Structures are given as structure tokens and as C-alpha cells.
Image (tube, rainbow, N blue to C red):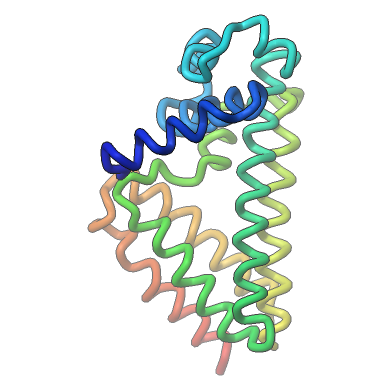
Length: 201
């Protein structure tokens, strides 16, 4: 949760961004906190300190803005993966442990509304929606990177462990929203470690 001072600094920094970045920043915040369907372009334009004409000059439609929002989320996730690789690149086992601890922070974050990409998948079931292919690609890339990590860690069945960890994380994020961080989700690290240990014997 941001302090009043931190929030003021953040808002001042956002105000200095070019219009397209302001619009995208406002959309990212509103879509995650309130839901994609609940937020209209008027609210996004107002939060970005601009108008609908400027918004549509940069994004052809709200659907295109949603797709770009999800691409931005993946870019952030990809950067987090790269950071993990840089910090533990020489030791895949340590990298796997670091991944477990890093995602556990997201699972137990009291301000989290779960995985924004998974939330978008629930809100946007239409296969022809511009954001749908972005959602599917993001989730597939996350799974692929986890498989690569398990393979590099010389896990005997890397795909199986990766899928188990992937499903455990998805389930834990939903549990946090439904029952709070002190519900079943607080067992995430312990359950994840048990899976890794079982595949490491």
C-alpha cells in the first residue's frame, strides 16, 4: 500500500509522461483494481488527465488498449524472469528456489487481486477478442519458461514438475482472493517445496 507521500510522488511522475504512457498507466491501474469490464474509456481518460479523443488517437478501441495492457504485464513478468536468471544464472536449482520465494510474495500480498492475466481470461472468454491471444501467449510463455528452468535444474520430468508448480501458483492466487492470505494459499511455499523435493529424489 502506497503512503500519501509516495502516492503524490507517483502521481507527479505519471503527470510528466507522454499522453500514450499516461493512458496506459491509468488503464493498468484501473483494469487491475476494478476489472476490465467495469472500467470505461471515460474513466481511463479522466485518470490519465486527457480526453477520449486523445485516447482513441493512441488506441483504436478499448479492446486494443486492453491487449496493450496485457502486453505490458507480460513485459514486466519477462523482466522479472530475466532478473532471476541474472541473479542465479549459474545455479538453476537456486533459481528455482528463488522463483518459488518470489511468486510466494505475490501470493501472500494483501493488496493483490491475483494474477491480472488470469483475471482477464475470466473476463474475456471471447476467442476473437484482440486480448485473448495475448492472454494465451502470456500463459504459454510462463509455462515454457518454467519448463526450461526445471530442465536446466536437471529435474527428471521437467514438464510434469513445471505443470504442477504452474497449477499450484494459479490455484494459490485464486485462493488468496477467495479466502485471504491466511487460508490455503499460505501453504504455497511448503507445497511447492514438497513438489520440487519429490522430483529431486
